[in-house]
Length: 158
Image (cartoon, rainbow, N blue to C red; front, side, top):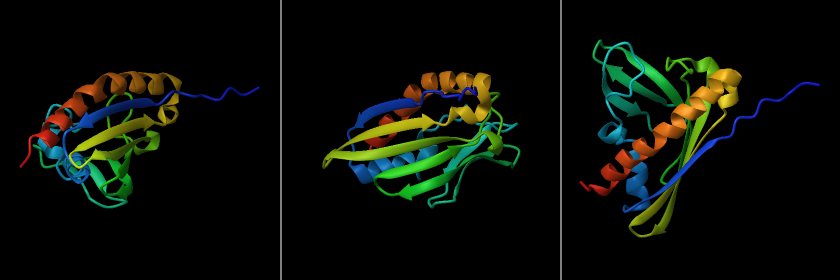
C-alpha cells in the first residue's frame, strides 16, 4: 500500500483598518513598502521586492549585485479580492521552481474601511516529507510577523 504524503496548510487571518482595494494594493504593488530587506533569497542583499500585476507575472527581488531572483509567479490576479502565487523556494531557502508550493490571499471587505485578510500557504508536499515539514514550520512562524508589517503599511495611509 502506498502512503500519500499530506502536510497541513498554514492559515493566517488578520483585520486591517484599510479599504479592500488599498489592502490589495499594499500587499501587491506596495510589497516593497513592507517586505523586509532581510528576506531575500539571492546571493547579495535585497534592494527591492516586486510583484508583477498580472497572472503569469513574477514575484521577485532585485539584489545589490544587479541580479533578479524569482520567488514565485502570480497564479491568480483578481483585484481587489484575491491573489495567488507559487512559492518557488526550497527548504534551504534557495530558488527552486521544481518544489513550488502556493500562497493564496483573500481580501474580504468587512466595511468601507476594514478588510479581513486570509492567507493560506499550501502544497508543501512538493518539497517531500522532510523539506515540506521544515518549510511549513518555517513559514508558520514567519507569516505572522510579515503580515503585521503589511498591516502597518496598509494602515499608514499615503
